[in-house]
Structure formats: C-alpha cells, structure tokens
Length: 496
Ligand code: AHR
Image 1 (cartoon, rainbow, N blue to C red):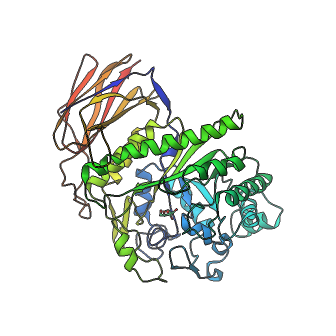
Image 2: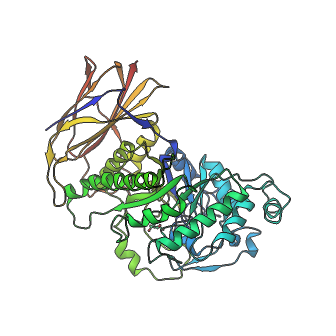
Image 3: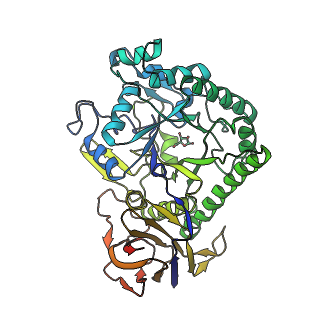
C-alpha cells in the first residue's frame, strides 16, 4: 500500500485555536465525585482534588473545561453548589437518576481549573430554569462587587470575580431526553433573551448556542436554521455533538466514520453560512464541537445500573486500540476544519467516557489518551490543507475511503512541521511526506502507536507510544513505513 502527503505552507487552512483541545466534565457517574474530587483519599490534596488526575490533565494540555454538563445542567440549580458545604442540599439528579450531594460546586470547580491550568466554559440551565438563574450566575461570577450576588461570591471566599468568558446557552435542547426540551422556535427565542440579559450584566461574553445533539435527529439542519434565525447576532458559536460506535463490530466501517464526521461538520458550516447570507450579515459564525468521542461500550451496563446512587459507575467505557484509531482520525478531521471549529471538547475527561480512569489507588490511562495527548501537545500552529494520495477501500456505508488519513501542522515559532498520519489498513503502507517551500533540516521525532490487538484495552498500562526508527529524510522528503493499523507522528525541523 502507498500513501503520500504533500506539505505546502502556502496552502493554509487556519491557525489552530487552542480551545480545540478542550474537554467536558459533567456531574455524572464518577466524573467529579470519586474521580477528580476524592476527599480523604491519600492521593488528594486538602481541597480533595486528586493530584494524579491533575497531573494527567496537565499532560493532556487541556484548555477549556465545559461544566457542569451535559444533560445534568438542564436540571441543575447552581446555587446548590455554593456556600458552606455542610449546608448544601442533597438532591435527585434527574438527568442521570443519581444522588447529587453538591459537595463540589462552582468555587471548587474554579479552584480546580486553576490547579490544572485550564479555563472554564460554563453552561447555564435553560431546561428547568432560564433567564433569571442565568443572569444571577453571571453576576455572581463576573461582577466585581457591591451587589447581592457578587457580594455573596465574596462572602463565599472569592474576593475577585471569576471573569468567566465562555458560556453555553443550555445543552442539547433539541432532544426529548433533555429536561425542559424545547422545539427550535421556543429554544431560539429563549436563547436570544437569555443572551441579551447575560450580556447586560457582562457585555464581554462569548456565547455558544445549542445546535443539534446528533446528525440523526429528525430536526437536524432545520433546528440550526430556526435557532440561528433568533440568535445569529447574539452568539459567537454554534455547538454540535458527535459520538461514534462500533456496535456492528466492523473495523473498517468504524474507522470510515471520519468521512461522516467530516460531512457533518461541513453540513453545519453550510447551514451557518446560509443563515449569514439570508441575514445579509457580515459576521461569520464559528463552531463549538463541544462533545465528541467514541461512546458505546458501557450502554448495556448503564441500563442495568440501579438508580439513586452516589457516584455510580456510569458511562465507563473501557477503550480499546481501534477506539484510539477512531479518536486519531477524528482529531485529524477536526483540524481539517480549523478555520471554523474554534472550540472542541473531548467528552469527557475523567472516568465517564474518558481518557483518564481512577480507582482508589491511582489512575490508568485509556488507549484514546495517547493520540489526544500528541495532537494536543504538537498540533499547535497552522493547519495546512492536506494534499494526499492513497489507496482507498469501500465499507458497508462508505465508498472510496482513503486508507491514509494525514495532516500537517506548521509551527512557525518552533520552525517545525508536524505530520499526523493514520494507516487504517491491515497492511503496512509505504508513506512519504514531501515538503514544498520549506527546507527540511532534520527529523526531531518520529513515533508510532501500533502493534496492538484492535480489541486490546489498557487497564494493565502496557500501551505506549514508541519511536519509529525507520525514517529517512532526503531531498525534502520524509520516507517511512506506516505499520498496519497505526497512529503516527513525525516532527520535522524546517527553515522557511
Ligand atoms: O457526555 C454524555 C452526554 O452525552 C451528555 O450529558 C449529553 O450532552 C450527551 O447526550
């Protein structure tokens, strides 16, 4: 098999926004409790924050943390999570049918973001609540002082405002499963009014309006059109969510779903631009892909989990090697849309469909941790439009799928071109990258994530990214072999 990528710096997609390396943390299962927050555990600090989790989050270079949900936010009273812990109410969380103790709330979250070097992306409840709770929350978080809510924040220990910049106007409001689900007309009007009032409190907010929860929704497309009719001028971002599964156990069809992902993003961009044209607007709306991942392994177990438990084991997918390849191809697809996708949140971060898993004695890193960590660390700079040639295959739902998925990122600061390449085939691939305009000086690093059984998971922590020692660089061309079913990265020092 053959594959070739031509790298040309004159063919740029866009600068990659740091916020595409973000994640969701929801009050769900063991995401917060028994996950990142575990008071009394020897691995936790005085705040109850697990220090092994903090380190792993830092290793992932996460930017924004979307919080507190997810479906959870649509039934959440944010006021329950502030003030003295012994006075906070225990409530039923109706989204996940669990017990919510509210021992972790807004102040704990803000402290945790500081410790992990991340930034908040706060969701407001537009399900069971609305404008009033949202404006109070903005006042509590961002107003300096001298009013009821801002003084209460001070009284609760935060003298300085949190200054939260990014806010989501509800979550998946198109879905009937959502508490307070609305039709597009109702939600569009509510989102518009909420945005207006939140901005009266703080004019400097970046707002994300809820798009479709999946491409399969009957309202997909029309939901966006109607909602944007009401909110186009109010918001900076439209959200989209996408999860993939391999329920049918068909590896090649599974990995080909990156084609669907690509079309999904392009379709939403087209809808945004159609609304822009119709409104004669000068403003281009960007996207917040604020939930994405593989999700399916835990479905059966979740159906059998008894309700009304504290921190139950929910959505605890154990990811295997093919899932890591899927996450890899999703990451490359995402970067191909760097011109419009400005925020992307891996859903989620700890224990719940997550790269980081905890138990009482430590953490273990899932297979999907590795490609995410590499792209998040080295995929900084300018995404270059991939000009590639490769053999193709047909699968159950897709035709002419390239076995190769590849993309280069140019980092002018470090004079570095970083190539991410995935071989989706079961044969080795002769792979070359030709650099145009640049002069390639040396290969800084060449790595591969390969050689594992596609169903292997990583509870025993044996998976690792290894170096690829069979790389040559001559005449501005890097040459190597991509192992069957492999995720690869090449860092090349260049002069411009
Ligand atoms: O991430 C898990 C759930 O998936 C979120 O709560 C919801 O927004 C989506 O359906």
